[in-house]
Image 1 (cartoon, rainbow, N blue to C red):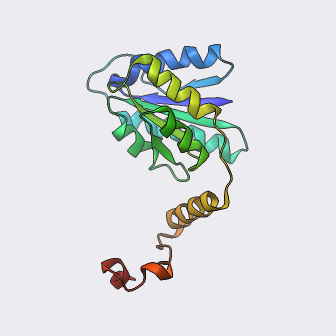
Image 2: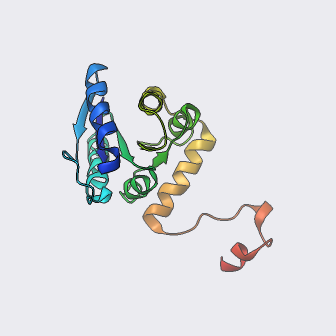
Length: 172
């Protein structure tokens, strides 16, 4: 499996560690940078490229996932989620890493290099890469709603249980 990686200066050491770890565990890492420490670098430059790499691979039918890394992982997640068709999850535990794949079919995971130990973050990535999407109907439906909104910018209809109950109903 190909794994695209991107980070900022705060995630550089973890990204470099993950490139070696992935190679040692039979994955094909694709490093989108950065390649040197620059305290003034901008995470979107590298994280958008990693997410674009995943999207392009998957469009060609290749088995590909991604990892983006920063100080907190928040900005990196936001950047990856700007790429059409990408769902990137911020993970902070083995359970959130597993559920990102199992329930949300996330193709990219974001981790905070300043939030956890190297061993913890490596384990989060390991769990994420190993977990398959469940394919449960409710998860497929929800992901479909997100994809439809991404394409059309039309909100999904409110369920009957929510109609007439608040300001969201007044807007649509």
